[in-house]
Image (cartoon, rainbow, N blue to C red):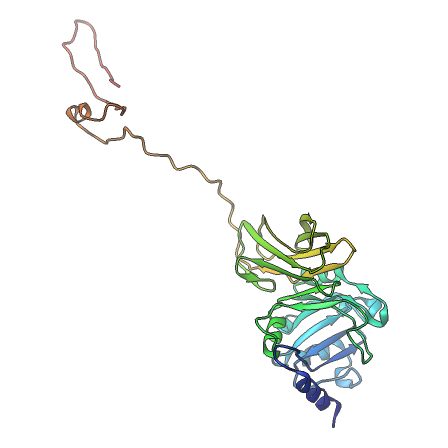
Length: 324
């Protein structure tokens, strides 16, 4: 049996809905960067002269249906930086993930600045953190995890969550983290507005103190310390079109976690209008009434009368009166 077919058999054999999901994938290891590919119908290798450059591989990747790609350890010291993370519009629906942490060979490296750089270069990517373990006991050498928000533990739900970027990355194996704005989950695009409200949720069975931070276009804009890592924090910040917002958690032991961003659309943000109080109608505003009607109003009401009174004109003088 070919190795590719063997991967298919193994992924199907180990998948049990509600318990474990196996996915078939491969890693392209080019000189300009390493890329994980999930859910593709076939695979290619940089050993093939037809795919030994990054543009050639990108061209192949852009033609794959329902495929999800991850930019691995995006730094020139760790296999390549994807031509300084140059954006490729043809891959906007395919490249959904980028490593913010990697533990290959037990040598842990972080890529927060590359995560932010990729986002600033228009990649719509969610952060991941992987052990990158090449032995049979994969997953056992580090507590680093990738979390997804999905309605069920099935292959279809997990793949849908990865495509939608409903993803968080954590160095603490039992920490879960999410970012929302109203009903929109991390990974979504929301409408730009002068003010935006975000809700950050953390869950950790260990009572660890944590500092939670919100970033706008890669710049820290809000920070709050909490005594425990089981919190829900709602924060309002100034909004902008074509912005991205993500959250980071820094636990007392130094462990980090990141959410995928929420993006705002291209709608121009209107200038905020300062609210003004609506004038309340005067109790004495009866409209035009006769003097007889004015005499009949309630005793506690004030009445303003405007009119002209005519009297016999004194010699050599004029008199005009306004009454209140």
